[in-house]
Length: 446
Ligand SMILES: Nc1nc2c(ncn2[C@@H]2O[C@H](COP(=O)(O)OP(=O)(O)OP(=O)(O)O)[C@@H](O)[C@H]2O)c(=O)[nH]1
Ligand SMILES: [Mg+2]
Image 1 (tube, rainbow, N blue to C red):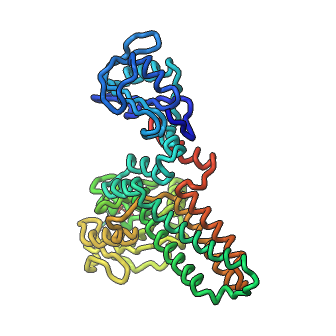
Image 2: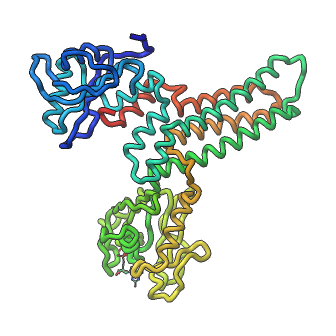
Image 3: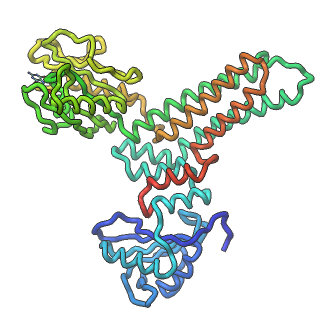
C-alpha cells in the first residue's frame, strides 16, 4: 500500500442522518480498514465494487447485511483506505453496526473528522471542505448551486490567482531591492505601479464576490423597527405569508423578538420583528426594546416602519447602527391615500392589503446585492471575509509605505503578510486551532 503523508488510527461513524430510512451508511477510514473489513465481511471485497455481505461483530455474530464498498488508499474521499457498509436504515441496527466496528478496533469519529483527513491528505482545500458543509446545509437552491461551485474550486481558484499576483509583485520588488547599486526610485517603476493597480482591482472584485457569497450562505438579516402600532408585525406576516406575529390595534403588542425565514426569489432572508420603540415603556416593553437594540447590531439592513397617516419622522429614538442601510417604509397607504411603490428611497405600501409589497421585495434584493449574483457565484463565510479584509489591509499599508519611502522593503513585507492572510482562506497557511474550529462545526460522519 502506498505510504501517505497522513494515515491515522481508524475512525467510524454513520454517514447518513439518524432516524429511520431505507438504507444507512456506516463509513470507516484509517490504517486498519483492511483488517476490519476481513473480520466483519469475512474477506476483503474487490475495490470499488458493490458486494453483498453479512456484517459481523468481533464475536462473529451477524448484526446486519448489505452492500460493502472498499476504497483502497489513496483513491478515496479521505485519502486513506475507506470501507462503506450500506446496511438497513434503523437507529438500533446502525448503532449495533458502529459498535461492532468499534469492537474490531476503530474509534468513533469526531465531527468533521473524515473531511479533516481529506484536507490533511490534500484531497480538498479548506474552502472546498467548508463548501461540503455549506452544500449540505444550504437553505435555497441558489445557495446550493453556489456551494457546489465553491466545492469545485471556483473560490479557491480566485484566491490562488490573487495570491499568485502578490507573489509576482513581491518577487519583482525583492529583485530590485537586491540590486541597490542601481539606485532606483520605486515610484518610477511603471511595471510595479501597474501591478499594484491590478492587485487593488483584484482585491475589490474578490471582496465583492465573497460578500455576496456570504449572503448566499448565511442569508440576509433584515430587522424591522419603528414606533408602536406602525405595522411592523403586519409587515412580517405579509412578507412571510403567515400569521406568525400577533397584530392588534393596541400599541405595544409585540414585546419579544420574532424571527421568520423567508425566500425572496432564492435569497434567504431572516426577518426580525421587534418591540415598538417609544419613550415611556413598561418593564416588559423595556426588555423588548433592549432586545430590539441587540438585533440591530447583527442586522444587514434595517426597515424603519412609519405610519403614513402621520407626519414623516426624522429621528428614531434608537441609535441606528451607522454602517447598516436603513430604508424608510411609509405604511398604511390604504388610509393615507399615498400611491404605493418606491419614491425618493422610501417604500410606500400597505401591510394590510399588500399594495407596494413588490417594491419592498425588490428593494431588499438590491440591498443584499442580490441582483448581480449570477451563475459564477460561490459561497463564502465570515472567516473568509475576515482573512480577505486583513489581506487587503496589508496590501493598502504596503502601497502607502511605497508612496512615503519610495523604497520597496516595507511593501515587500506587507505583500508577504497579505499573501499569508490569503493562504488562511484555502488552508495553505493553517493552524491546529483554526482546523479544530472549522471541522468541529461539521456533523459527525462528514
Ligand atoms: N389600514 C391599515 N392598517 C394597518 C396597516 N398595517 C397595520 N395596520 C393596523 O395597525 C395596527 C397595528 O399593527 P401591528 O402590525 O400590530 O403594528 P406593530 O408595529 O407591530 O405594533 P407593536 O407590536 O405594538 O409595536 C393593527 O390594528 C393593524 O391591523 C395598513 O397597512 N393599513
Ligand atoms: Mg408588533
